[in-house]
Length: 240
Ligand SMILES: [Cu+2]
Image 1 (cartoon, rainbow, N blue to C red):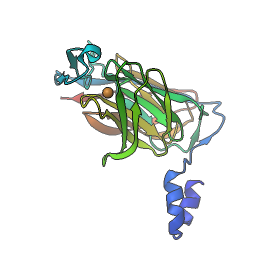
Image 2: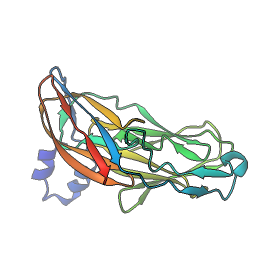
Image 3: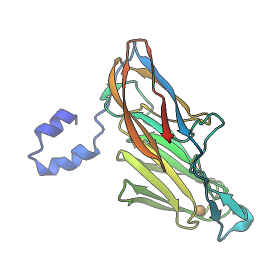
Image 4: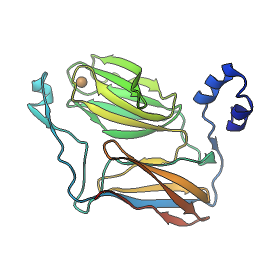
């Protein structure tokens, strides 16, 4: 169901549920696409990552762990920010069957931040010889999506990301564990690398609202115009 149909059917209450779950994105051939590149930074001194108190399973988890909320490189590059195009209804194809990996590894989530397209599945694995209980919550209200016991190593549990939004991942067994799956309605989303850089390829020419999100620093939206075959730049600094 596309957006127009949803709008026309707003009188039909029963169909509203369908609209909120439907992924209106349409894959088309992008022959003259452009690129959006840039670097997300933190200017100034980033807040210190707190030490995490390890309360159990120290033989596997270690005696101490440091949080990975702020990972800032030498040039201020901010890792683990999500950059995504907000207003795009059609564009490049993507693999709907791709499984987005999310590991419990040494009592931390790896990767700490990842992205998925609405409808894709996240494959949750436990690499540790202890019980993890991965708990996924949707949106700001932290509504439980899935609550999964993973007593066995290397037994992947796959769960569909039915709705767009920020999914917060925690572990009921180890309260310090924290991760995020940023679920978008289109495949134009990426997590910044260790140097804060990112690239979004095969973007159809047009003007876009591009959102930059970070788990602790919040989000901003920037206007970006992409010319046919061109390269547009989006640089942004959080902090001072
Ligand atoms: Cu755990």
